[in-house]
Structures are given as C-alpha cells and as structure tokens.
Length: 160
Image 1 (cartoon, rainbow, N blue to C red):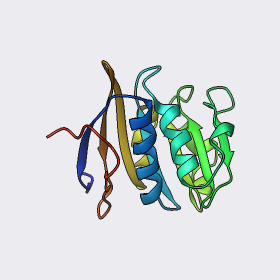
Image 2: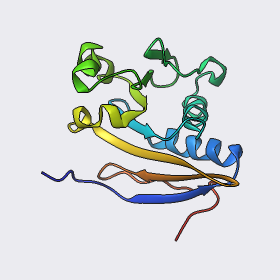
Image 3: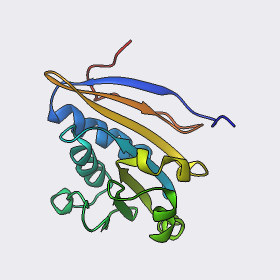
Image 4: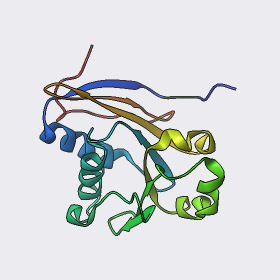
C-alpha cells in the first residue's frame, strides 16, 4: 500500500544559517502528534536542524543534544517536543518498547536515524527529511505529509 504524501522539497543549504532557517520554517508547520523523521550521515546537520526547530517552537536550543545514548530527550516549548535517536534501535518493536504511542499523543516527535524505525511510523502524520553533505554545505530533501506545505520564504537555494 502506498502512503499518501504531500509535496517534496529539494533544497541546497549552503551554510549553517540556511539549515537553521529551514528548522524555523519547519517549526512553523509542525503540530502536536506529528513526526519529523530525519536521516543523514554523521555531521550532516540533523542536530543543527533540531536545535532550530526547538528554538522556532519557543524552546531553548542550548538544551538540545543528540540522545544517542539516552535515546530520548524532552524539551519544553510552545508544544512539547520529544527528540529521539533511533541509531541504537533495531526496529519498530524497540520504538514501541519506548512507549512511542504515548510520546506522540501530545508532542512533536523529532527522530534522528529514522530509517531504522520508519516502517513503524507508517500510521503517523510524518514529515520525512534527508540531509546530505553537498559541498560547500548540505542538500536537504523534505517530504511533507498530505495537506501540509512549507513556505520556504527564508530558506535559500531551492532546487528546481
């Protein structure tokens, strides 16, 4: 069964500031009970993007760190934010064991290394993001859920 999806955005992020602007734009669109599933190699900017989303939602970006060993970090903001790192998870059953359904009920859930658990996210309102190194900066591919769009007024480097 194919997932009903929204628009796809291909972006060049020439510097950290562009990644931060993308995070601010995403924060304006994310709602409680939505997931942002982020993938990308080490150092591609996943945590930088999450810091910007936390700031855009009114939280303290200085508190954001990758939860590789703790698995879950929570941040207070206009909407509660759950930051999950799936790098050490085997599959969706590990996600369920963390109480994912309860975490999702009232929070925005931001998942790094989401490919490890993506099949378990099929029933969620989900944004997908892939960030890749693309010298001199990064390239991002975002797919919005049905009915959602990004304005991208401040993000430079849209690809045709």
